[in-house]
Image (cartoon, rainbow, N blue to C red; front, side, top):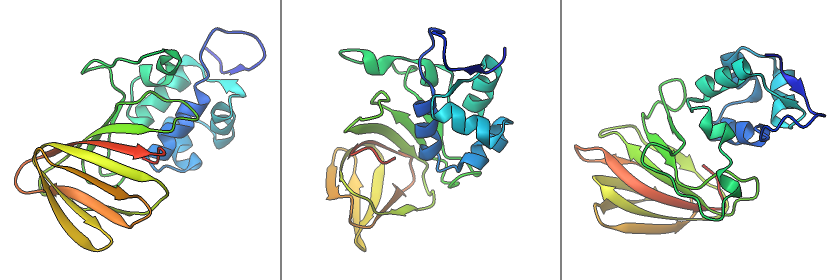
Length: 196
């Protein structure tokens, strides 16, 4: 199946903005994703700008390179009045050694939309993993530790956040985090605006 130029109504949802969103979440440059998916930068740019609908084979290669299933790109959840994700339905990705190397997994709790104001994630960080960050950006963050203990550094101050505790900070303060202790740490993490 060839990549389709936009023009006729093919009934497929626009996947371009989702591809761009996931590429940025993975902190990949356009050329990095194009190389991993075996396509040209110009084709990927046209896909991201909704000028081309990718073929099924290109779509599968993009999903493999982004470590997501095809539903993450084709799922029209943002059009629903209320979105419900089951435990195995949430788009997810893992930061492996090719990226930050911290081994954390992020499950996305909020459906994709270009103008989303809120981002919800279920993060799982491996025990004794490396520090993730530092980060600094506009917005606010709040989280709740489900299991394990989170080590959070904000503006150079170290905080230990155990199971059952929550945290809040302004995102323009330099921050880093990792699992503390001997077990994985699972955190519900909310950002506004979306930045992950």
